Image 1 (cartoon, helix red, strand yellow):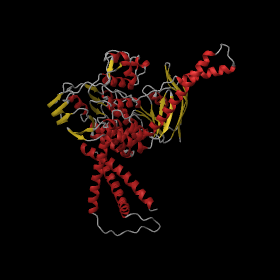
Image 2 (spheres, rainbow, N blue to C red):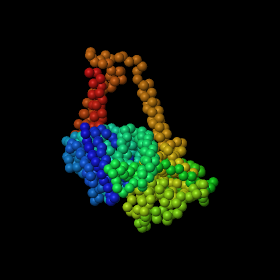
Image 3 (cartoon, rainbow, N blue to C red):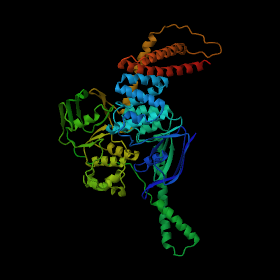
Length: 631
């Protein structure tokens, strides 16, 4: 089914075009990633498709049966309303029933909860509520009565994501989900859950993301906006890189050819008399096209710098028996570690596990409750935090960097000027004279990162450095860091970034436990899966040893395929299980409707009825699968 058609779309801000005369189509089931430099108009294009902005030129056609859902980088809330009111904003009986049920549960109001449960049962809303609870639980969203204005930046993103996912679960069948950087402020477990969720929902998807594993796993097509044009690439991120390299090489050859032709044509133009024939006029018009092609600049984001790093002495940093807690929440419990020269450590763990606190304790920004933190005299920390860029007064980009230093020293004794260093991090000479207040969010983060690196530290601490950075900037950063000779400590949910740069991990497991894993993130996840499989194998072995050794094969009715013993046994038992669950559901519903139960019992039973509904769905689906096998 045809979802979207776009023809000749153009958009500019001032004299700078974001994109010109681009055309594309989106079909049902397409899963597309849109990549481009920060400031190239990715977010603007998404807003045009969702109807929040208009194009300067061109046509946008969206099928009338398609609902467009937009998840934005900067979500908008009704600030004086609760999280619950913001998430459940549809006026629909099922949504209203779930909203009333969640509110009563949060308030621990027995009377309201009893009435809400009756309404949930009448509207058969338990199945959808189970899905809602899964989304809220996986995104770590609690305290639904909290006012939206009190949410932190990360909480706002997660609540907005939950709202979007709940909306598309409730909306019509045909949904185009548009997502702008959905993985920002999510920990790795949340990102992996979101990947699986989007895959299972079988959505039509258009997203902007810098997370390359997420991009490859969630999408099967990549669109790139470059030099105001749109290029399409079928396949994953690796295939996109190959095709882009080939395109860049062909473009370079084309520019070289145009330069040679331009020199010849320029000589001919200079010799031309003022009176022009029709033939010479045609050649002169063609000359300007050749000139434009010849003067194109090829951007090369591959940066390799032999940095003259501040000397790092024998002693780097040492933590001895360090304890740190906030009330009952334990962050560090007797942590011991001695950092060595050149170490590259990744830090992973759920949000709220204390990763940022650990970084602050290491730098002695926060003091431990007990224990010692010793830092070598030669250590120069470079701390890139999630707080972002702060400037006392608005300045031009070049002035801000020159206030730090005029030059950046290199290992061969030479140096780069502030302007040259800015160009390496994709700030063109024109952009360098732009005021910081005029930069996009991603450009400000890029400048913040650059300002940390320009101070030439020898112990870099990067707390979520990849948020809001485009893929080109990430390539520049990774190449820079791969040459970095000092210590590197990275907190990031970007698995690709971690795999490329770290040698081992500090895994924050909660309650003060920190595991030192010898390998990168992918190797760590592989080890968890292998441990899980080993556990499953052990359980199966134990289960198998308890089964009878000699089994009489049962005969299936004439004209039907013969099921395996295991499938036949499952098929026979499913009908009984379904009947038992249906009876339990009726009994639980009757108790809930009695109105005489204490709150705790009501809450347990309401959770149980949701579980029963989910189990019934699962078992009925399996019964249908097995029954089809014997038809």
